[in-house]
Image (cartoon, rainbow, N blue to C red):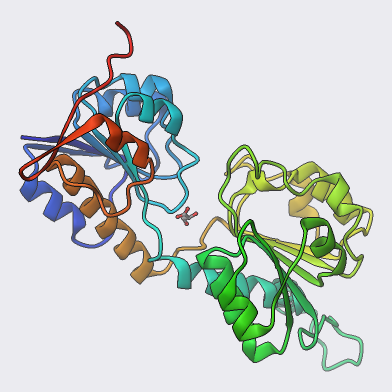
Length: 341
Ligand code: DGY
């Protein structure tokens, strides 16, 4: 029988299902992420955990439960987990891809429009009672038509963002390790190097996972190349951008504006960013629609239960871990590596 820890109350009915199937289910009831100590205590003696992107699943956390078999992250990204160590210990890691593609792509467009048409600034202006009537030069923005949208990372979300550009009549360029047939065939999109993309794009949008290759991918060098009229949008992970380089670029007018849903030291946001009018700041809400969040929770539970029942979870991230497993009648049994002996 299984013991499970869930680091936050999840939406929908997924936790009820989990409760029915587990011997012991502990859910952090606080309306915040567990502290490091709470996390260590919560995971102790558990076979599985459902974590969020706000939980740092370090070596120490992993070691807190010698019987841990699966970490089901309720997010597409899993940069919060020490994946190398978990894999070494034979622990499965799963994520929740696909179900938030549409929500995140929609939010990206909300941000593109917000920065282009200065919507939050216009809202603040109106509420402050400054609107005294139509004026020819009031809050002039940037038209999207015929502009170039540069997509950095043309995976599922990047592709969806590209496809949603159709109604706006934009030119699409992208950068990715792979050629994106969908974008090329449907939108005549061009695959470019990062350098070329940042040079010619009017709107640059980032859709990359965070890893050692993408950390600070956009830094001073790139901001020296951007058009002074360009906007940067990030709904992926904050650390993909060197935030102090971005702040400097915004202050010096090397780039016109930015729309950020994620931050380098989330949830901390630089005071300078907060003071800039040409920046739209959101609190990491890319996947924050009711339907996406319920599907993410359902998928995390599905992955967790599959792993605990000895089946291959539908969204197993570290497939290498299977090499240490021997198939059995109903799935496989786990042969854990002995790390400390
Ligand atoms: C994810 O799933 O990685 C998103 O950042 C959650 O909103």
